[in-house]
Image (tube, rainbow, N blue to C red; front, top):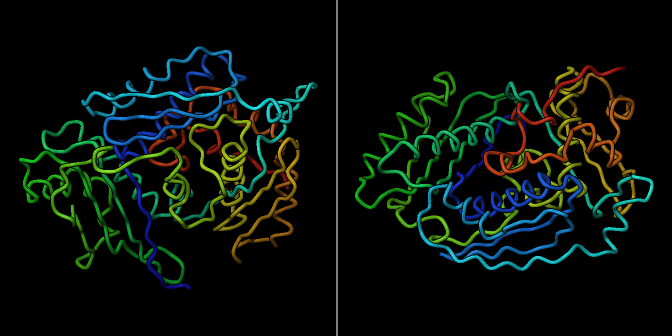
Length: 365
């Protein structure tokens, strides 16, 4: 389709799934801070005032899982008392021996498929709908922290109209925000419109027909883990490309960089972004696949959706000339053994210049 509407959503740091992502990545960061060779896959689930922290860890770090979980929840802005149960075992020795080779090589932490995507919709080479949805969600969180009536849980959604496959306008904006019981919907709508939507969305993207839906369900007082359960890794579409690009089989949060679900997905984004930034295509998707314990991928694929200035086969040759998909090379090139992961857990893993996988390099071809 050349003329179409496309919608993506984002969520705030107070959403229960994002609480769990932040707990998981805060645990990972603490492990890497003490022991950069940590192999971690410790996740969280939350409901009401109960948190379960569970998974596998192979690390020299001494980690207070309960304290980290409670600190994350408090930092977000929830004031209730939470009970934290922990069930963390050591990583399987079979997996560990497959991943860490005696000669220092690193094999893939699991089999799987990963995708990276980039397009020229926006200056950061992200699809427009997810980029605007993330900006709105981040702005909503910033405004909430200064507000007397807004609370931590929230969602945003943006529908972009495309004409001839190019952005024409924004058709619909949805913002749902938790709030105190005393707030009226009129107060909330005025605040969100003035302080959240208007500062984020350029006037030339909206018109008299743009639809604004602010708290369309009405009252939203009960939120967070008391309004819904949450689990690490349930928002992989929000975390990636808002549905515009394909996604792999695994989530990101909780996983150390030996887990290619995370590191190779970051690398695929890095590669795809550089192809678009170099003017070789206006859209690019890269897929890579691995087998557990193997250093090199079993396959690499590129698709430019007919937008390439060269054939996809030629672009794949350029990719192979400029990028190494070996696991150790990915980790080294993107400098992934550092405690950088909590900041990825909200508002998307891509399109943010602070991350190494977003850097643009000069391609040789």
